[in-house]
Image (cartoon, rainbow, N blue to C red):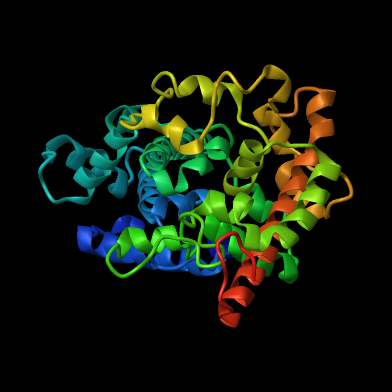
Amino acid sequence: MRLINLFVTPILLHGLESVILSKEDVRLLSAYHRTLLKHIQSLPDRTASVGVYLMVDALPLEAELDLRVLRFFGAVSRLEADNPLRQIMTRQMAIKQASSNSWFSKATEAAKKYGLNLHHHLSIPYSKESWKAITKSAIRSHWRAELLTELLAKSSIAALATFHMYHEGPNPLWLTCGSSVQRVKAATSRVKLMTGTFPLQERKARYSPTDTDPTCQLCHLEPEDASHFLTRCPALDKVREKALEIRDSIEVMDEGEWLCLVLGGVTRVHPTFIRSLEQEPPNINTRKSKTFKSRLGISVDSIGSDKIISKSAFSGVNKSATSEIDTKFNGKGAHSDRDTELNKTVYNLNICATNFCSALDRERAKLLLEEVPRKPGGDI
């Protein structure tokens, strides 16, 4: 993402802050940007956009376009009063109607979307640093709320909310990969499970119910969904047991907690998140929050306060990690020694979860290729 932000986005949007783009132009640019984010994460084209953005802590390209437009407006507003460009802007802002197809009307419309008043800014300009901070905060808050609203409405990737509802930044899956090629390759299986694009039978049958049997092709016992694949399929028990031994040597977890980690990126569910399932989450207009709890299989009563890791625990990593990962994790959020101690556990469990998904994927592919007849129960 750093390379994309440094080299791709500036070239893609160079000079467009002063141009009136049509909706089709914005759609094409956004589609290219979204496809690029999918490719760097090894995600298929059918991946839900909200999952693509949240996994790497990116915003839609429309947000970057709006940011550049508003910052260009701020630069002009800070010019001297007798500057011709400043005088043109002042006159156009005064006479142009909101319905006109001028650049100034488009800039005003974009500002209103984020709760900003350009007329006030033009009369009393903020400093460069203040305006940059205000616009960045307003745009990020708006789009983050939009993405989280969309996330809660999608059952296939609902588990991602256990991390992204209460923590900004890339998902721990990518933060624990660092620059290791081996870890990045291993992460491709898990990122597809997290974004609901892993080719499980239940997912295939959802889109082709007449041609595809949702039953697991390895054990023939029940539909092959993420929960079955990760925790119950007897044909994968040997691979699963090895991974779970490593997991339990780090921290003992029940099945629900393990699924939250593998599919969401966190080891526990934040208590505020549990409470938000009973009411509308703050600043998020979701219509499906009531059914969200059942999708995750979480019981409020079954999660005690002693089993909760606060969101600040996800903002650090053990000191033995690479400096690159340490820089990404450290900083905001650590409020106690207990939180700091938990950072190593969060880091190691995410590595364990990534290797676990990769091993299961390889074993599943191997068994499917062998095409050996199997009896119910997983026996060969």
